Length: 307
Image 1 (cartoon, rainbow, N blue to C red):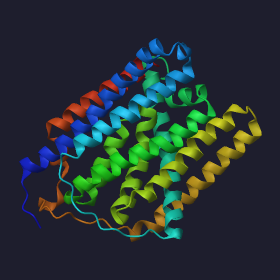
Image 2: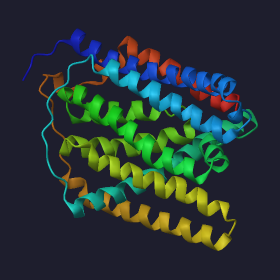
Image 3: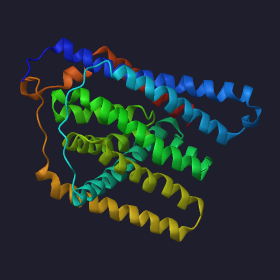
Image 4: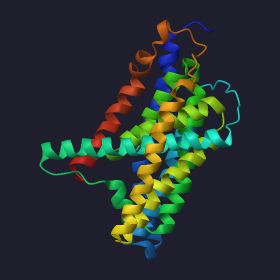
């Protein structure tokens, strides 16, 4: 094992957090640039909500994510052992993702309800609003393909390759936390954090993002696009059936989580940490503090301005 160099490890984590903050800032700036300036040269897309959605996503995925990945690449990566994930185990873990998704959704709804009581109004679920106002094609391309692809690339591949040296617990927590923070609102934070823990665990055990990527796509298809499409039909029976399917999957996921808990494997890293204490390294650095302030401001904006 390597001796612990606190200054070096804090610098590494700080750079990764600053990379994520850069993504948040550039997502906003690039979206504004694409949405406001492109229509000046292409008048046909002016005053089109659909065009604005595509342009905003273009700014996020063509500018913000690549810049974040480039900055993260400045931190040296550590090798990951490659393992296969069996077919049966894949679906067991996917069911656990379904449970985490539903649990996180309830937590998000509860948190927003509590804030609504304090403010005298309930903040809007901006994800539902965005998906309801977008076309089926946009939702499928962005929510089912682009978002999982770029998010797994950055928050699993790029990030975990650079923090797994501190052990699985640190890698899972940092991957899930940063993944949750970049979504910028309480409705999504809880379930992205919880599901992010599972995605991170899968990547740590396999060293391949293809497994978490497919799970991510399926989760977004089932709980995002599928739910939106069913709700748009305004058919009480279909909505009830779809909700029942999601509930059954979540209950099955809880059963799998309980059964598989004893089989979990969390490894220590090759940096010598006193009693595996990594939290001070993760939080006591300028990058994490600035990221928490920046993402906190975005959370507050969505609560106050969009509520």
